[in-house]
Image (tube, rainbow, N blue to C red; front, side):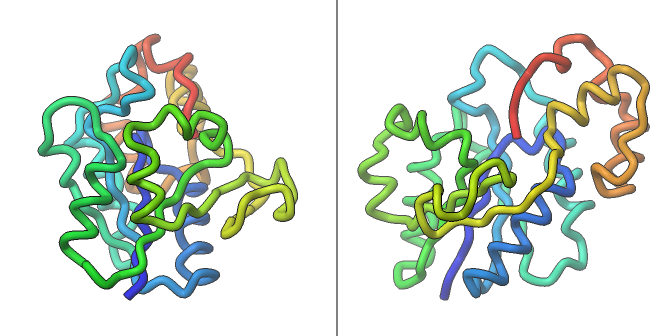
Length: 195
């Protein structure tokens, strides 16, 4: 069995996340891609994400009826920051013989050495580098998935805060939920950079 682990804030999840997840599923011939929303990213401790239940619901709405996509809320039940190595060790115990692939954005590679117990992490997973087309495949460490698009959660939040459309950037049911719950209208969401 081959399992792709896709962690992140997903605040909100957007079509770029889904495109890269589907590309990884197909290119690496994975059995499943599991979206794992972080309770609190250790690299964004100064910012408060949207409530976890809303981020979880946005993922559910986005991947419903998508073959090969799953969601796991295990990090939302742990106290404190969500450390990748802890999640990977849980998956290693759940699926001892599985090939585990952890997705990481190309922009996070330079800070990988600062991740908690990174050596233990790298012993348990194969890193899959996600690029957004700014570098050629040959410039990324294999395996890698590169697609040209320019969508980020920051852009989505900023557009909502400015009253602009987010159509085609997120699943239409996610856009409805953002509107209904009036997410991202506060200025605190506007300057947070993430993929």
